[in-house]
Amino acid sequence: MTDMSAMAGEADPNDLAHPQPLYKLLRDAGAAVDMGPGDPDSPGGFANGMVIVGGTEDVRHVLAHPEIFSSGIEAVSIGQVRPLIPLQIDPPEHKNYRKLLDPIFAPRNVAKLEDQTRQLVVEMIEPLVDRGGCNFHREIAEPLPTTVFLQLLGLPVSRAREFIELKDGIIRPPVPASERVEYTNVVGEKIYAVLQEAIDERQAERSDDFISMFLDAEVDGHRLTEEDVLDICYLFFLAGLDTVTASLDCMLAYLAEHPEQRRRIVEDPAVIPHAIEEMLRWETPVPGVIRKTTQATEVGGCPIEEGRAVVVMLASANTDERSWADVDTIDFDRAENRHLAFGGGAHRCLGSHLARMELRVALEEWHRRIPDYRVPDGHQLLYFQELRAVENLELIW
Ligand code: HEM
Image 1 (spheres, helix red, strand yellow):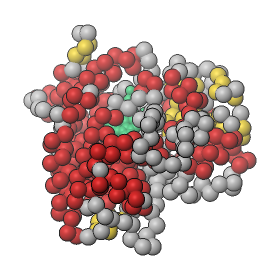
Image 2 (spheres, rainbow, N blue to C red; image 1 turned 90 degrees about the vertical axis):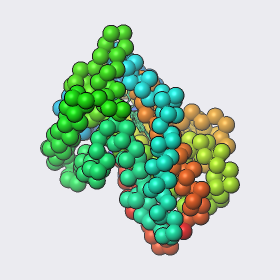
Image 3 (cartoon, protein in one colour; image 1 turned 180 degrees about the horizontal axis):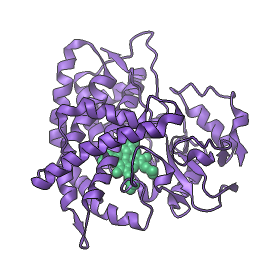
């Protein structure tokens, strides 16, 4: 296993806008790169130090072996008091939950949500058209998927800003790493309280929303307990609120800076689904996921001890020149695009069909109304690292 700490300085780790060269450096360093000894104060499973895996085939291997690379609660701490369902449940138990949840998020059910999503998207974009500019992150990327998702889940949209702040408190806590666990635990308690309130309301009276569906879901005689529903909702709160926001930010930033690619979308909206897949590959808004080894093992010939946190770099896997033809070309016509932006293996994203629908509808309606836009001169976009988002995405048209 290579010790990556010796390589610091060869690439600019602050160049978050274009991280692909850093990923290449990582892959060149070895199949499993040891980031050195852990810090006992680190959150989650990082106390024993982490190992990074970034080659496409090695990432697929890790994701395909949950019995060795566990997603259990120790892998990552995000303010939860029990394992998040289904993310932090390992197979075989994991399958019971996916059997219940998969049908709710199947393409045919997601298709039923498209009209209401489109109406909402149009209502949000229309008032901007004559304004000539906006902070895309604050005015579209954040509120749009948040509103869609709160409506679907059955949480009050009027409290969207409060929920966004709670979600940010977990995903981007404004405190040093050593205070992170304590801080996220406090925010986590508030999220549990909000969700418990919503579940209590649905227990009293069912409605046409996901919480009601979770309470009634049944497969092979199995039903979810109320605690299960709470643990599912906690995960959804984080997974559903942030990821589509991050993806929209990354995609609009890319399209703003590549007018020729944007023109293709405007002139031929049928290309949008392919463009989304290719931008998901290139940008990979969830750059990495975490596992913890349950036993000593190896990846690509590199030994990894038991109990190490393994950072599985999906973003690197998606730009590995050994697995992709013309890897650095963002090709909306790429024939086969088996990217890993939604992860892989048992924990592959449950919300991928919903996310794709939201992204497609947003890109269609935006480009129909605002086809020609750009980042203002001199405005430098600032990217976040953990979940790739662009908080200061200003656009003018
Ligand atoms: C473009 C947007 C999205 C991206 C890039 C994304 C990415 C991912 C990734 C990489 C994983 C795998 C995590 C792991 O292996 O540890 C995952 C899992 C998951 N995602 Fe998404 N996601 C997106 C949207 C959504 C949405 C909208 C929802 C809400 C329904 C959602 C719900 C979930 C859930 C519940 C899991 C856990 C699945 C399991 O453990 O079986 N995701 N997502």
